[in-house]
Amino acid sequence: MATVAQAQRVGPRVSWRRLQVRLGQIRLSQRARLVMLMVMVAGSAALHITWPDEFPLLTLAPWVVVAGLFLSPTPLIGLYVFIAGLLALVFWIVPTTPLRAITVLSSMAAGMIAMYALSASRASLGTYGTRSNRMLVELRTRQQQLAVLPALPEGYRAEAAVVGAFGDAFAGDVLISAPGFHPGHLEFALIDVSGNGLRAGSRGLMVAGAFSGLLGQVEPERFLSAANAYLVRQPWREGFATAVHLEIDPATDRFWISSAGHPPAMRCSAARNTWDPLQGEQGPALGLIDGIPFPRMEGEVHTGDALILYTDGIVETRTGELLDGIDWMGGVAERALQVGFEGFAAYLCREALGGDGDDRGALVVWKL
Image (cartoon, rainbow, N blue to C red; front, side, top):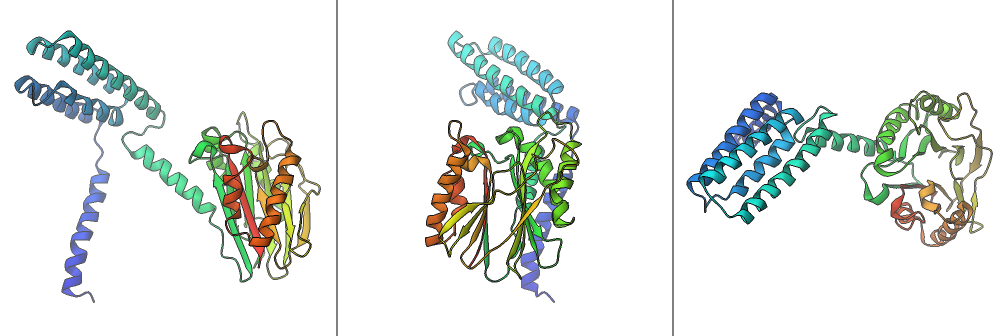
């Protein structure tokens, strides 16, 4: 049972949360918002007319911004026409210099144009205010949660990193992971959707959601086939993606890899201090041809070994060859064999040959 002191501490906090919820449930119509903003604008203009020195005309500028955030394009135009009429009235009542009038009008016009463009872009989503931003933040958070690596058994470690082109929050490279279809197994998939940065970000979100419903839920040998069937059905102009799927059985140290048009996974051997691209037979990129098989290769990891999955943004440049990039990554992987693989996925994304202009993704799984 809570004490009185605890109730005093909890009570106001609960009340504040309820107030936040209730405020968040308030939905004003566009007409009500327009009327409220017109009143605020008229009040600011009246203050300027009464006390021109204390309240300059640029105090109207915040209402221009607020209107662009919370009004749809049609009422927004009406409000801006109302503001223009008020400005003409104010200049007639409170004379000013031509230079100051031009400065005020040009500043207001620039703000109106920018906020109208923002309102028009949000109109396609049907959201206004900060709701669209919160929606995008929530989508991004859910995508990141899909990439959270599952708990690995003792003796295994894994790290992953995904970075969008030029630091964009939404990227076409997608990592998903899940407990395996077979008990005790682990599954990972690294997908590279066509395009990069924000252009591929929306498709990356859809792919992450759809493929996460397959990973660990269908037989591992059917994962890429099911993912391919999904992309074939999408009416995207650039509806293809490359992918690599990894299944690990920590109890036996066996692994299985299948690839769809993706750069070859890499295995680093601690006993031999060498690296080898796993270049077995693979299928084409996802979304091009339905009903294509995706062969799997099998191997075993030993103490100190590592498996590295990566996207082409890590190893590919506009002028260089893909094999040269793989050789570069093999060289840095050899050094990691000596010092350990902690932070290696983030290092690959940071030092990627593709630079900041491409999406980059990497996953490293190693056995201690």
